[in-house]
Length: 366
Image (cartoon, rainbow, N blue to C red):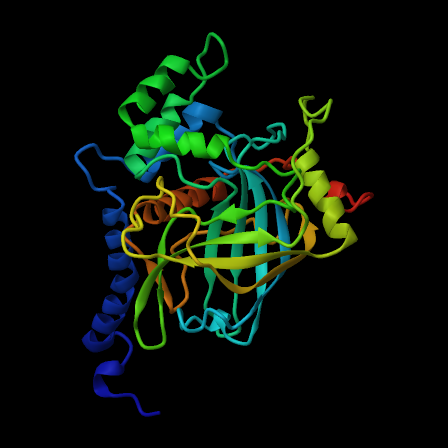
């Protein structure tokens, strides 16, 4: 193809167009970060959150600053076709999309002991054939404990250990909850949630709201959950689960994947008028109808020591055409914090994680 005069390398025309193209993601990024409240008089930034995580859980170079203890998984998502009227995203069509996922425990301690009530997470990178991606980090709690990132930062600092006891100061947490009644309500819901025996039979919720965009352009606020096909069993106390280095949640998951693939149904909940779309601390009524959008199948586990889920983030704003952010402020804040965490750990030496290759494939060198 013949080059037009203003398309020659170095000419003002192409330089201008390249500058405009390069500015688009920057402007979008600044818009999302601004929506999350980063540019505020209190200057709550990504670095502020990194410092907060360090104050609570210490510094662990090379690891994620939150959800630090984890393990990679791989598989695929296969659509049922039932969500195509809500979203034009190709992954809801008649396709099978590869998945790189990660199971983890909340908190910044990569060697923490597993325990039944610790918050568990499932992160997914769904990659349909058209090259689009849908990334998400979903958790086994019914609601987020706070409404926005400023409250999250204060709430997290309230959980930091007292140097004298090594445990959170009840007075500090009590003061926060007293002035944030919605957090008291959220904590009550979180504490009363069913606790299953492990990662494999747990339900993981989006907590945040997003907008599905239909083929004709109609937008619908939604939340979603990954609901397991595996039987839901209540957790039974294990006499040795408080011993140092206990990794039973992960070893149980490794064993389950070795026996057979594990499956979850992607259940979409469309909002109805009056549902709190912008407040992740408030639940939607459990009576809302749900749409079974497809099945997630996971069939292999890998250590993060060189595993496929290690060198990227599960940025919740990496969305395919057909899904967009809502006015829920948390995803934008998470996106910015994840990027900062990746930058920091990419420049650090990472020691072996708690879940080693030898735990997944006995006899493999670590």
